[in-house]
Length: 295
Image (tube, rainbow, N blue to C red; front, side, top):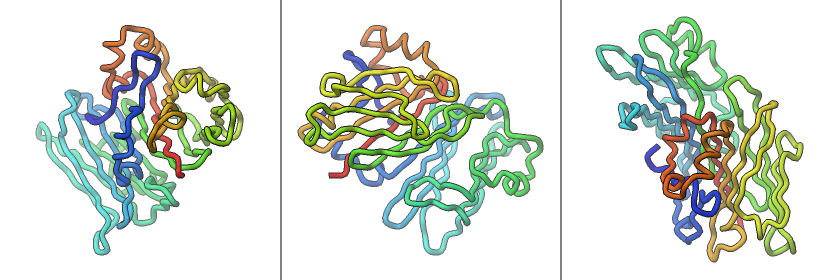
């Protein structure tokens, strides 16, 4: 939460630094997926951050719970080890109430990424209520925790931040609303050295949702697409791809709620520069993609 960069700049969307500092991003931070959920614990708003990362030893998992002031309440790290179990639980107490975190990754299928594809669960339980449940092993999670009822209706998925790698094509999957279907998202970009006029294409489930021609002139911008019949604002910054003097990344943001973001986009630069991820959590769902080119 606290390390998220400013998302808007004076000349449109400025979500990536054009300097060579982007090269300094460690491989560990690049091979990561961060998911942020807004929920209520003991009648207070909290943010739960699930960070998946991958290193030479294997997959790692970090779970953080922050209060409404973005102060860390509790953190669990599950690191790869030849002798550690890939399932377990931790708990802490707040206001005399027990808050438990359970996970089971023993059968998880990670594929080539840092985030599991299926056969796992992570959940947070407070006073017998299932506050958060991710993964497809829902029945197993309820049985293990003894939670009653369904997942709290006050929990929502507010943000996902992912690093992608490719030469001209970058792929991921995303669900743009809590009850929506999972979509394949593909970003294609013409090469600055091979194409006289580089272009940008974004596909949702193989269908073209957006195409930008004359990318050298439109390397930053925004456009609206429809996903599941709902408007999704897409912001892009591919300056580093086209003009960077060193290896850099492009940044894309998919935002499901438009009014507040558009207001800040068109407002004064001082307010837009200070827009942080914590503020975006009230705007609906945000998908941030950092696209790194493999040379």
